[in-house]
Image (cartoon, rainbow over all chains, first blue to last red; front, top):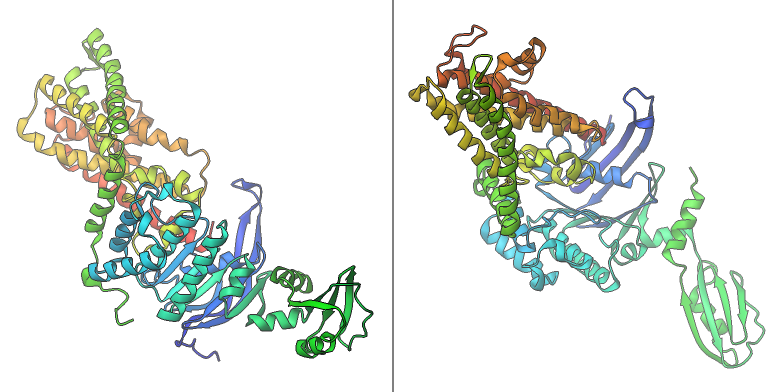
Length: 326
Length: 277
């Protein structure tokens, strides 16, 4: 007996499967081949959480996002988003979610940002007062004041992405799905997008599902990370846990104003590089916590400076995939 | 938030939303009025030139197979006016393969809480076919003027015939868009039904061989929306023997054809949603 899907979660997915049948060679009579895009994934996202959804290309991310958005019907499995099954009533479902596809525009190239938002108001049936309020709030938070009257085709990528995010939120969705929202953006635009999403979640309790290849997005935003690969969930945990389970490694760099002395290091730490004025030590914080190691090396003669760093997230994820081959 | 996410009482209905989208597309088209005027004039001239071909034929021979220039001009005008209306409304379906399927932006359309048909109708209310429309109207009026036995009271059928014809051509465009889910290659074949239909509709049914006659009567109801209504208006007996009043009813076949194509479209969208390709 299966228990009914919980309604307190914003998103519930149980044993979701999707198989694509593709025609080889593209001819009408060609053989068909089945490709398993999702091979039974289950997870749920509580209301108000920002969940990162990551995985390499072809892992099944896009398929899952399309199913959750109501534009693709799965082969089997159960999904509830806001208590609705996305594919059984597309219109009711999409009225209550916001979706941003980083590589596609949902605004109209030949209209200004303001005209596009007004058209979305009528498509979603947002009341005039609520529209005015939301428009003012979004224009302020996303700094759209200067571009409201510009045509969408004239916007820079960063400006366009801010306009896209405003467009996806004009109807107050409870759930926001962001698919690669920072792709191609410059550093200030990325920071602006991240700050906005963070505030949205904090101030309005919007549930956010975020897919990205930019691990800094995940690090800055996601309380929780779902790693998908080969159509399965490889990990589903708080980000820090993922980091700990995949790579419990820290790096301590020591700078000296003279030739560094010889070191005797405690268990769990080892010297991995030596330069004329510096030493790099790699350590496992579970064996030797960082403060203890710092205390151990802190009295070395001639020590100028020290820095502790963690391996980059890209490195963590790359190693994670390597540990879970197909 | 205390606001309910969706308050149906304030939502624009399909007609209201269509008017808003069409209005926005007109604003966008008129942003460059020079381009629009040149295109509309070009549309007028090219379509008028094709009529001169027919006119010179009749000028040389007087009448062909018992059909006079007035009747043929009326048919020509009728089919062109109807097609111009369909072109104006159905632009979203005409460009569906290139602008929605190839680019993947059909997904974006599915993310909007409205019917896909309505959203594609609202893609663009195209102003350019006004050239074909005016030219067709001009030839239609001239044809009625020249035709020998016009039933002036029967002309009330004309708007109904135009509506039926526009519905039929819109149906062709919707069917073409539905085919794009299967392939976006080689769909020029469908132009046989649109532009080819306009060409065929310009001539009386009896000028065609039996096979083509059956095709444009029973598959694509071109005869029902142009030929029979024109006979009715011109009080011209049907050489194939059908009663004259059939022309007052037959434009309904255009709507029936549209209905079938809309059904095919809904099935195609459902297929897309379940296959994802």
